[in-house]
Length: 285
Image (cartoon, rainbow, N blue to C red; front, side, top):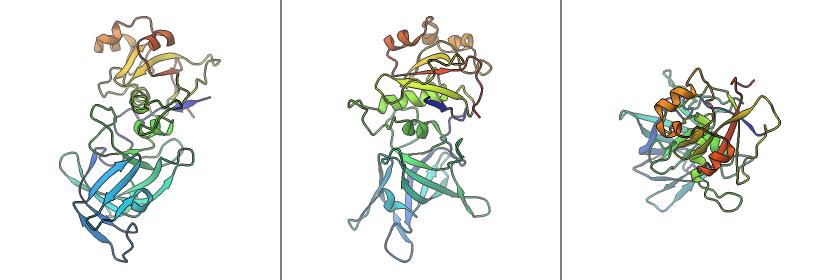
């Protein structure tokens, strides 16, 4: 069964420090450079391709992906403060080699380098950088750092890598955006999540990236169809104690108009993804 565990109910990307980071100042290259002493590179040309950092240096060198292992990136965070994040290790994901697992580290109050990402259900604390376009629900700046415990990272790992193509050449960027909305249960697409950490859901699509796994499971029922801007229709909310269907209709008039919501009507309304969940939702073990 393609059952996936849900995200934290907040809009962070799983970072245990401030969640909004963007590259701004400098990079101190450690093991990424051949020199014995750490090399400070001011105002680098730093970008992202897929899930890989790309650093272009004035002397013509280009460091890409795993070559950035050991680097310390000084970054601007929300509120104008500056933080540093160390790239402890960078290795390809076994299932999706174009997803590079970055072990991000930040310094705690004692000066020790500790994981920047909160663990996911499997205890993993890795993440990766990603460049998402304006309007994408996961974008937090020109470069966003996401963790595998956050919706952006989860959806890439589910197979909706926004820089990749689907089984028949489909652009996966809108599918990734729809997945982020679905994982967060952000029905209105207004940045407000309505789920609980560890909630089990069954997500699927019509292009063959994810197949339904709960059709024969009486514990699961259709919840909603999803697009990049949120749900296209909602049969029922995932956690009524967080938001009832009636409260959702009042908060989001476009969804109030979609009274009869099932997989077929969601598809007709332009849904890219669909999900099922338990009518009495509970978190997975």
